[in-house]
Image 1 (cartoon, rainbow, N blue to C red):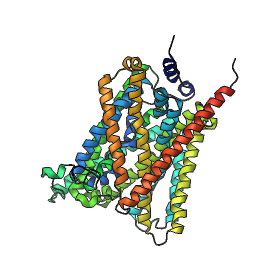
Image 2 (cartoon, rainbow, N blue to C red):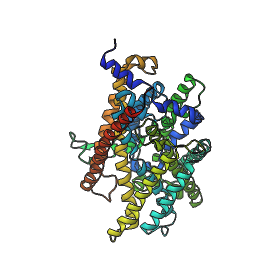
Image 3 (cartoon, helix red, strand yellow):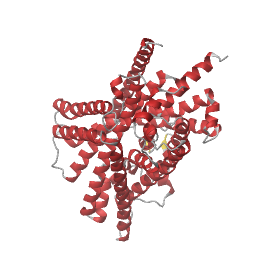
Image 4 (tube, one colour):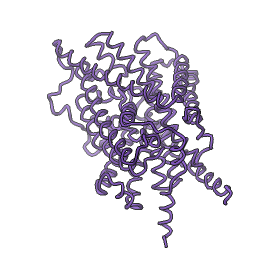
Length: 509
């Protein structure tokens, strides 16, 4: 006879309705290339680079440190979980398997709740870049809010197109992004070949080091350690392509295993390499003067190659921002869809359109993002007199992205909690789908939790922008993060009880 604990584990590991529903109703089309390009458009945000530039040559060290301490653990654990459970919803599915429905909903809520802010933030980047082209454009906050709302709605319409068409657009956009990376590297080389000296001294070892004072408190704000959280959390989103795991090419389990491992090998390598190359290029041409300036990537190209190439790069980057908005919308909609199928959310969340896309979930996210744009750019300015429009955009962008990033990071930590839990409760299942040894999985889970925790604390204590003092930043970002966690816990209780009630109310044969 099975013990109660064994029965509970077996119940958690039983197939969820969303696992079979997706494979029966949605097209399986995603290849290695599709998953890789989706990974790149999510992980490599070129506007993260100016943050690293603030650290000088140490900014490159931060990218490498973040990749080793956080990105690599995320990759290893995501690969193992993805091979064990290659189902739609990724973190939602995995946390249900490891902890059950309550924690499954809670982790997913933390992971999903930043989505409207992320959609708003990526659209806001488009507005900021348009202002960089012409400072006379979109000067009034209400104008920015109107354009943001239009961009968000347009992204929702695109996200509801046939998935193969949308994925082709993403693939083309990533090619444009790679072109921009090559262009800025060429700009830095041209700058040096034309006789200019590097604006950053790379020859001094001390310029590459991560440091803080006093030695016993890395969170004091002394030294450059305050950049650790800002840069490391730029690697969030490793498992997002697996939100569509049920839509990968369906040849066999071996083929799906290859798709997962392939994108998780080459994606992190490309993203880290791109971050290092673009950071180095800006440091060569502009030095730390290019720090915290969203348009510094383009201005670097302008300075070395001229306005024509800068304008071409701007168009490519704008395409990237828009398709990133689309990607965030349709990928996170899969989480709501799975919740609807599994009776954690209203059934309407699982509604598909004629293209087999979760249209209701996409529109709900879109509505939330539009409401946020109206709040920040139309209503707030009515009560904030004399605020410079550009400063307002930057403040909203950094606060929105930081609070979203922290909740996103909290949700991401469940990757590691899930792995440790499954190693304890279902060791044979882990061995059957083994990609790494149990010891390796334990070590990288602990490393990921520690690095993620440090990055979260560092982000709360150190403002991402000089426009907001650290004390104010702590109150705003800390408050928003705590509120998100509390709302998630309450929502999880309601969702779990509702699912149990629906299950009891279902007639039994």
